[in-house]
Length: 185
Image (tube, one colour):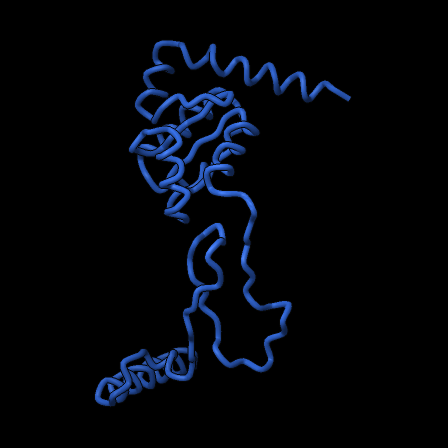
């Protein structure tokens, strides 16, 4: 019975796709009744992108409309604040749990060996942020790693420091600071 229902469903989908391919509809069948509009939500949102939403939906309440995550801070100020507030910071492609680049993955694996808390920002989601970080460090490639507010370099430099034992000394300060904060009341 289940096989009969699924094969009938597949046949129906195939027929509808063939019928829509001969018609002047350029969208897939499941999108024929959806109307979307892409319009800029705001110029100052962090992602710098556009929002896609149903155009004329009278049932959408104001609370569920897209909002702009605007801030009075410039991207340069945000980068400076990130560096100041995070003992180990990595601007990378993806996130530590899901890197989207082999170099970013390498940098995260090396840093994780020391048990330090890693703060990260995905530069792929915001090209303006990416350019701001490049301008801040005058370094063209990613990942870019900061330790104790100081730009260290990319994955190749971190790996080299790890192999020479220099990274252990640098991150020992971070672990010591973390221990002091944990023991404070």
